[in-house]
Length: 186
Length: 170
Image 1 (cartoon, helix red, strand yellow):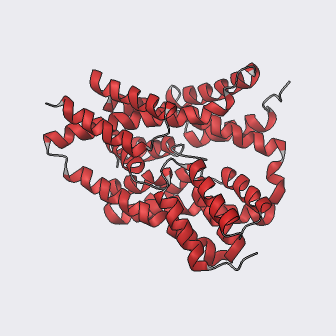
Image 2 (tube, chains in turn cyan, yellow):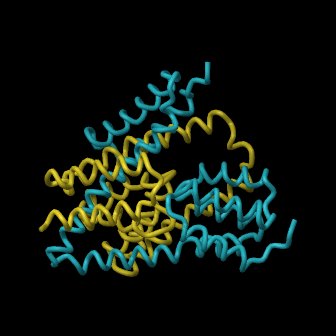
């Protein structure tokens, strides 16, 4: 394995995480090609383990992936630097955009443009729900699809209609999932 | 609201979510409904700001923090987005391949499905606030379809939506 430089590792996380649009999978794929293929730092089987664990780590998957991969290569200092590098530049852009939004509150034209972006954000939230459901919507696997829709619809109903706290809904879903598994391919 | 409490409330949201905007229902429940320090419109704007910026989608909590408590709030949001990432180190150390157990995998997958339902439930009040006529409705539907069927970055959708909103005001 080539020797790992803390600085290069942080720079890779900085560049890939902050400049890749399109969320989790494209970013993770870009990191794979950097860390596994180009630099040869991370053996493929380690990449698969970190990738799988990043998906089940709470919070943002890419940040967990950066933390896990950097920890494997450079321990805690690597993990902390990688997560900071992956987060802080984008966070600053988010703050500037938010401040811009607040200062434009009294301009009628700007408000019209902002109203357009707010409507688009609603579309994006619907997209987020759809992306979580999509892997379960496969033709010829009706039982799996039904289970997914039932879990999602029950959760929506518990939260919206009966005002059950989201944490409780997630806990109930974890319990249900532990005992009621998705049917395997028949 | 002080930044420390805000950090713990946002951490509660990020630490129980598994991707993208799945922390949104908890954020809305605590900050909009319980503490009344954030409006639905601000939450909606935070989502737009988070998606306009490049980088991880979960960073809309930075914008939420900024709306609630200015720059210290934004720092609290940023820390709350980063903290759960370190859980993976504990997992790598002690769990290793055990995470592949069918029961554990199925539980996590079900939590993700429940999160889809929770996102829908949290979107309804935001949609009521943002969709005030035929034009916003068309923008919302067009954005959704555009992102489902093409591979363009969300920043173009946000820009297009802003232009459409602007054009509609003339």
